[in-house]
Amino acid sequence: MRTRKHRNVAATALAAASLAALSSAQNHIPHFSVTWQGPTVGVPDSLLGAPITEGDVLVAPAPAFTPGFGPLAAPAVRYKAGPGAPAPHLGLAFHPFCMGHPGGTPCRVEVDALCDGQSLLLQQNVPVRTIFFSTDKYAVGGGPLVPPNVPSEAPLGESAADVMVNLGTPAGPAAPFASPLPGHSAVLDGDGQQGASAFLYRGVGLQEPSILAPVLPDSGDDLDALMLRDNAATTTPWPVFGVFFSLDAAFADPLTGLPNSGSAAAHGFQPADILNTPVPGGAPVVWAPAPLLGLDVFGAGTDDLDALVICENSIGGYQPAGFPYGWNQARDMVLFSVRRGSAVIGMPDSIFGLPISEGDILIPPPLGSLNPFPGIFFAAENLGLVTARNLPGARNDELDACDIASGPLYDCNGNGREDALDIRFGTSSDANNNGIPDECEPTTLITPFCFCPAPLGPCGNNDASAGCRNSTGQGALMGAAGSTSVGLDNLVLTTTQMPTFKQCITIMSATPIAPLVFGDGRRCVGGTLSRFGVQNTGPLGTTAIGPGLSAYSIANFPAVNWIVAGSTFGFQTWYRDPTGPCGGLTNISSAIRATFVP
Image (cartoon, rainbow, N blue to C red; front, side, top):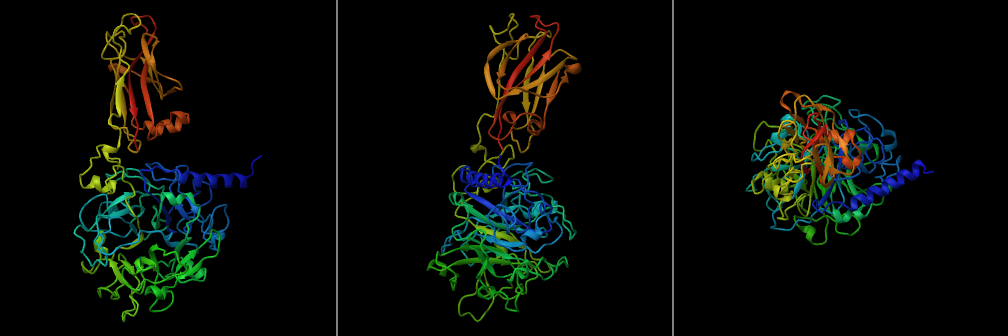
């Protein structure tokens, strides 16, 4: 008999194996955390069933562990915050006391920033095409209107759980509006469903929408830390340099008046320290103290590091770069942002002398600088975020999470550009609005077949343009409308030219067969058959099934007949016809073969 321990160890091994076998269409695997206010906190994760906390490092839901189209299960825990579950963990001692607490109630384990030390090493004079980031729910966004983005999603409460990518940013240091095309577009969604927004893109299992007000408990999640691991790196259960992260401040949020969770102080650290857990389950240590980053100038705990990008130089400990691109001289590259309420906000940065904003991507001050504060490396405006610097009286948008990767997250056509940007700028079409360029999908998704030309009619009741002829003098014809996107789930199959007021059933199977005599007609689907509910042809001799075929199949059919992305099924409608030409009492329509896509 397998014990719970054995099952959990097996599940953890399955997670590692599944992560190692991810589709090549996705170039990096998003790891993330959530804030304590969101409803995913306390929910059992989709791998081990352990309650999720705001200190856990999460990935998209099991068993795929990759972003997909909703509805989705809860995220899976990749690394726990601390002991108390059979998974690698960050070594946070308060984690066992926080497991199971509900969202909307703070606990002293929140992780604010995340990195594995393997972000893209930036080169001088080389523009940056892949800055992935997330904002909090109060950000409003700016820049060109290239939806889905913060301006399009935030009013609907759909932005805080999303991940955006920049439209194109020059090599830093980049002052406000240095980019010829400032702005961003969404590449990952929270729940992967088309809600009030007109856009559909892959999700990670978080809950949306989020209430745009300081009301607790919140109705939606806020993605709070982000780490993109290269596919090749997922073969190892723990990053080679360990996990880098920061913890939460205790000071109050000046916007809501609510105190932060104080997870840093609870574990004996400052909220602007960069911590490192070098081995799973080991004790975290300070890798880069706040003062070396130009933080806590006004005293310990007065700043809170909020996003983190590191390229480790493979030498133990933190070796400051000293100046922009000094990291190309065997030094560590460190970029970060700070949280709303940090004392450094509004102070003059050490590169441009501009007031620091919560949306800026910063670097430590140059060694020997008379200015003790961080320098602005990528000003918020280049990412399409709003600051009071250029819009007096505005509230600064907050950058919650960030990573810089070596290439696009999704690039199915291999042109080096994010698929989302191909679609938004019109270089690729997306007729079914599923976030995948049409050139990357099968050219023929819906095919009619199983007509009844001579000599297939069992008694000479041939009909070359439909199923075999019935008592109406013509054969029943199945047609399709909508798309084969399982995310949209809007395919509708309509069968016409049947006798009136007769019972009928639509059947489906993944196995095509040679036309087989079936009543007065020919059946062309075989193997494991599943049936949709009994219907009536009504006064017009017509019936329809859909939308919602994918959801119905998953809820009612065996797994072999689940309509999911990549599956192909044939459909036919079987109907009563007591006065049919061959005396078989029933007949069957022509068929539709559909290949389903995300």
